[in-house]
Image 1 (spheres, rainbow, N blue to C red):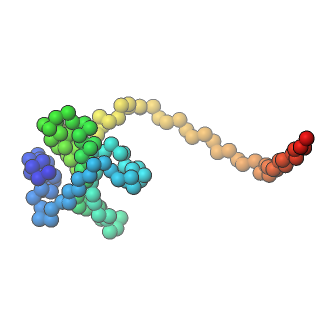
Image 2: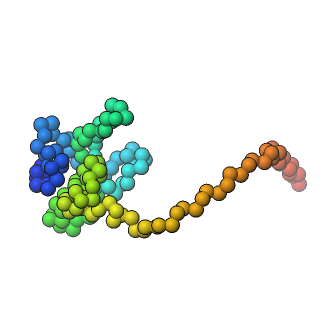
Image 3: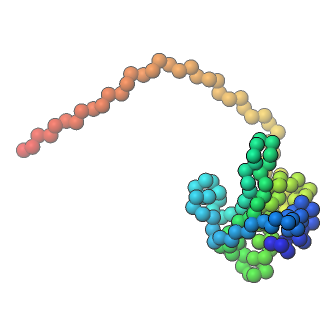
Length: 152
């Protein structure tokens, strides 16, 4: 991690490896069930850890990074490729956390965010359907009675 950050061409990310308070690095096999239930993709390779901002004006502060080893191994076919996948996962996650521009992402060797959009549609969206006034409430549904069976 220190090598990835210290060799990083982006100054903001390079400073992370040099700051006095080191980032926490957690290494797990896969994301926990709790994270997956909260909506985290179970195939994710890295996830930023941050404090919550104290107010609406204060952004979250990065405190660490979680690395999911099994998900990286699944992508890599060799030790060399593992290092490449780790570097990509770390830089991609940090670029997303700091909301780096496409130009800064490109300097890191990452694809631009705009490349994620497969379509560009210049046509305006159709107007929403008109609101439907509610009719009078329908009569409540009645429960059916079970028919008694006659035993022979």
